[in-house]
Amino acid sequence: MADTGIDASAGDAFVAAAERALASGDLSRVSSAELERVMTAAVRLYAAKTEAEGEQPPVTPERVTPTDIVVTVSAMLRAAGMNIWDLSMWFRRGSAD
Image 1 (cartoon, rainbow, N blue to C red):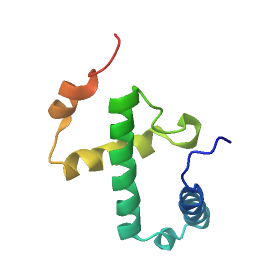
Image 2: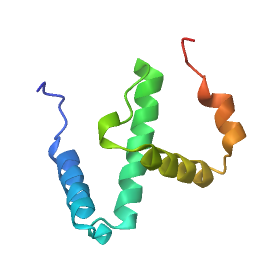
Image 3: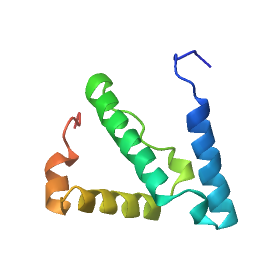
């Protein structure tokens, strides 16, 4: 693995905690506040990298379900005070099609 200058152990620790919570069914193992912090940072970094470097793979498709995606996207749209119409205006932004 290439040295990025960033300690990957923090990401690894969060992923491991999330996987343990999901496997055990004890979702309280990761607090809502901590999940919000991680999601916020990940979304901001993803958007910045996409703007700077072009399209980025946002998730590993084999590791999430369509329901996971829709639940998350819907909650993010509501949190930002957006709706499906707003999303449709941005959906093809940057698309080569």
